[in-house]
Image (cartoon, rainbow, N blue to C red):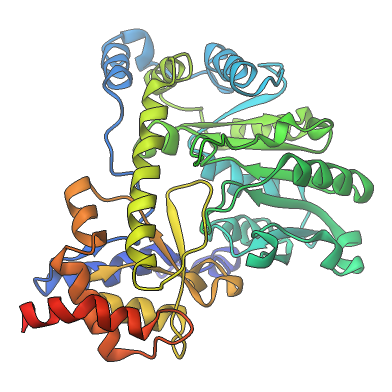
Length: 421
């Protein structure tokens, strides 16, 4: 017998990151020494104290049984305590926090937990590609909010079609932003709350990169905004803050009705998360957060190194305020994808094409600052031969006016070109 996929599954978007990995692997298979700046997978290990807690909890037979359906009450208390300490936000652990097997689960399942088919939801463009999975599974109508550099990649609600606004019942935000690295302000969040209340639109703020802020500025939590819990929730994850991406643990916090909807759908889909992982997550939240501060310092150092190298050749990045990405314009005459392919083919440097994050990402590539220090230095420092070879190939292959200065290129590369022959 042959079994066909359902119509719902057939409508799922193409997995962008799977396609990117396939291209990189094909290049590696040729024997190329690929410097992978296209990934969003943290390269540092989970802190030792969290690993030790996990080891101890895994050995406890009490954790070998089914989890409680709606998560460990102690983890929910720890999450509430974390928000109180870090952001001054008060949360009811049982009514305003839901445990997730990674925040992606919450982001994908929420549309079909609170929306009916055909209802309109708003997504940022560019934005995290997996938001689209929830749209397809819930069979809802999608409208995009264009994020533009001149507005610091924040949506301009005044530019939305009034008919779209009237129809919308849910919208997603993501700050610090993937892919741009933009950050939101308290003023923007207050405007968002006022807008959401005026038009009866639920808000989901994806706070995956919430711990990663630069230049001495800590990212603002949406829930710090007066009235935020009336209109929405924030989704947090341990993946980025504690390098626990493979552990699959996160939580949603905020509006009690949305939290109950998440809990209800998860009652039918899951039996929560392995108890030992939840116990280790408690250890992470209750720690002094020193490991997080050290991680943020590492990412900021990498960002500054990369920006210095790029600016030295006249390639001006968007000044990201958070996350671990650099959002870079592509040269004239190239699309995001053709430029990314050029870098991979000619220089063995992988970046993520901006159009993979939506039409609004066309004209940019996303650079992930997620390779270990020696490889990152090799890729970014101007003294490194690999980076110079990359630039030489670019100089020979593309028209650089408007993005990179040809004079800067010539002056910078002349001695190295002679050295390399």
